[in-house]
Image (cartoon, rainbow, N blue to C red):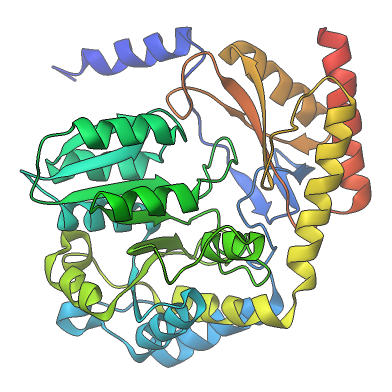
Length: 396
């Protein structure tokens, strides 16, 4: 096709760097296992942390929502797609996050794109962690605000940037709560203190914190309150964004905030205004998952037990994961080729752990990103640890 030579050139270039990606078609997938190329592999790559996507109650709730509201909302929320089940879900999410209100989006990615661009624009400033998710980065670019990127979790650098920045109409401080490729947790008390001291709106993306952090799975606020290092009444999160597609086992994004900010976002967020509403099945599934968080607390306990067991076993071998804080365990190999080779060798031994390469992670930090699930058995966790230890010795 004339004018598209650059397509093949670019594919060849990224292929030469071991950065070309290919879709992996699964016969079936759940939090615990995948059927890939006709083989059953133990899955250590899913974000379905609690195994709720395959829970009978969640599937039944999704089916019931289809029966009542059909397969699609058929329109944007502001036309005729705002269904009673959306409002029930938003009310439940607001209670869960202890906020006045919540608003549901068709995905977490478009939530970040739209929210950031609605909150700030030309003449405004954004202060963003260097390892924030791509959706935050793209939202910052789309906003046309001036973006200051601070070194990962470096609050001294952040404060210097804020102090040295010129006056602005509006300032937004935005960070992941749990960083998706490293699994470390943002310093909420420090971020909230700086936001309050320097008159910044504070927005946290709790995609990997919702359902995981805190004794009830409420997220990062509950996590730090229970540690005794954060008092919500003193400082708080203005914009608590999250997803329904990870620990809640469904699909979609949401924001929990004040009632007035919810109304503002309904009127100003293009990715909400111009998008078809969340499918009823996803809303129904998420509602049931929220109930299961309290009905089956053993799932979160199993998740953390598995995390502790794998972390301990890896630390006993040649992998240093002492800094790991959440059920995301990154094992860095540096080069793309090394990470790909380790992933392939694990697959040969029955474990599915894809390699993560640039641009998903910085150059020179290609890795295996292991994610634990509540439904992994002790034998599966021990088996992965044993294989990793053996492979590390072989390659060393």
